Amino acid sequence: MTELPPAALSDDDARALRADFPLLAGSPDLVYLDWGATSQKPAAVLDAERSFLEHGNAAVHRGAHRLASEATLRFEDARATVAAFVGADEEELVWTANATAAINLVAYAIGNASAGRGGAEADRFRLAAGDEIVVTELEHHANLIPWQELAARTGAVLRYIPVDDDGALRMEEAERLIGARTRVVAFSHVSNVLGTIAPVERLVALARAAGALTVLDACQSVPHLPVDVRALGVDFAAFSGHKMLGPTGIGALYGRGELLNALPPFLTGGSMITTVTMEAAEYLPAPQRFEAGTQPVAQAIGLAAAVDYLSAVGMPRIAAHEAAMGEQLASRLAGIDGVRVLGPQPPVPRVGLASFVVDGAHAHDIGQLLDDRGIAVRVGHHCAQPLHRRLGVTASTRASGSLTTTQDELDVLVGGVEAAVRFFGRRA
Image (cartoon, rainbow, N blue to C red; front, side, top):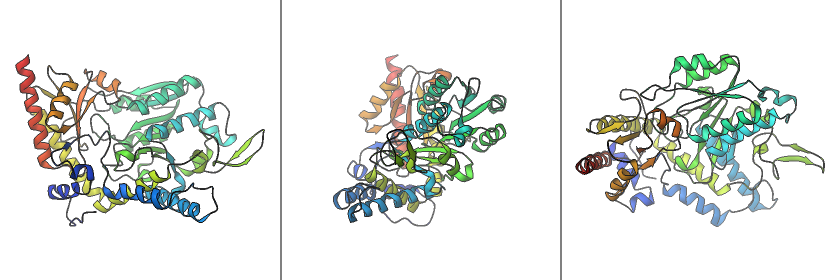
């Protein structure tokens, strides 16, 4: 990768890093501001996947031959690398297909416990009619619908912490809602629409006082902030490889070791068992008990390479770069007449992301106009319909940057939005 000086990540550093990304290096006029949807991949990640498939491809945890043994070692080394990146032990990291699958794993495993599976160890997870699951009005559908389904299966009640008119969590309502009947509190670390950072410490403290489990959607934080799941105190956390410079088709679930080993499995089949008879089966300890079937070996190795890349750049440097970017996005876009930026305004901290609405124009039209100028953004409800409905809009345009985003790219975006306002203003 490109060698960087020891100073904080600068605009020149971001420009130099762009050369490490083949798609960006080969598209010098592309202003890619859709990192919140999926990240571009540095050559180091592409090379790691390709090298394994060309020279080391084999099934893991199955064969006794040399190739299979080496593949298993690389697969487990990747687990250790990714676990350490988020402050976890390797036994506490489960590979999943993506973050959505990780959250569903927790929800369905709790559902299995509630149906009587898992024995006495699983009693702590069992939900009954009248128990409560608390989420927030900020949630991505992936951290809402699984809990809706779990409530429907168990008779539990789903409640949510509302946001105010600016999109900030109403913590006085959190204090009222999280109580004696609360069994699960699930919330996003960073809003994928607003870019704002949740008060994790306060939410975890409320959940602990109630004896409830905490489930953190860390998709928009792990790629952009230094994250230590143990320091955060959460019980479970989910994140996705493709948002953090890694491959698609892989995500991870962190779970405290004693909890993972007490949860009954979700997917069942080969490679997650110790003994099988025609009548019953016994399961391996975590993480293997949640990894039935053929695993995403090349993707895990690619994700470990992505983690190595992020670590070499330095997550504190990336976070500082993106915090400044997020503040500039929010303030500069809000300064354009006819543009409304969603969420609390600076100095409220955010990652390098801002969603906005242009008066008299649909988000899809804004996205098309920007695309015509070589600017790639996300349009729609960003899998967060309830939040958009609360804020009084059906859709928004989201610009999200990352470690390669430069000042020049932000200038191009702002110029494109100003042109969109003028264009749609004339049409009105």
